[in-house]
Image 1 (cartoon, rainbow, N blue to C red):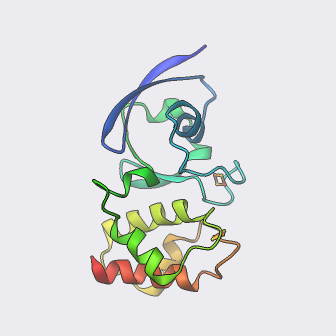
Image 2: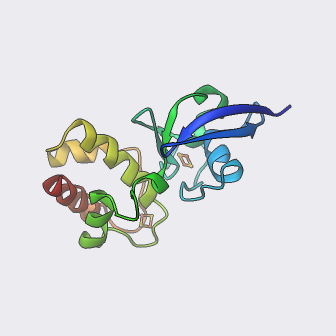
Length: 154
Ligand code: FES
Ligand code: FES
């Protein structure tokens, strides 16, 4: 049976109807219409569904929507503010860190948490922060460069 839950998504209050077994990924994509967050493996193995819950990166495919009621969710749609791209988005463009783009939203969310907590991360710290996010296209080097660029810009 559906239940209504309140979520703050990207700074806006939402009341959405979810089934008890709905994941946060499903709630975002199918109930709130925010399809920037991608569904890959749907089993905690790829990271492309990563969003922030109260500032912490989580796999939305492994998070029940009911478990985050009342919390603040940031999805990739929340990175740009007022049409101005986040420095992380700018840096991904500048570094050419996007190929097919399927992993990109999740990696940018992991980077967002990293840079919020550590404005000058080492390469090792960047690699550690995105260790749960698979990219099958780029070989990671440009992604790491993009996060370094974003850190330098921040
Ligand atoms: S879709 Fe969530 S970890 Fe792969
Ligand atoms: S850019 Fe294609 S999976 Fe990362």
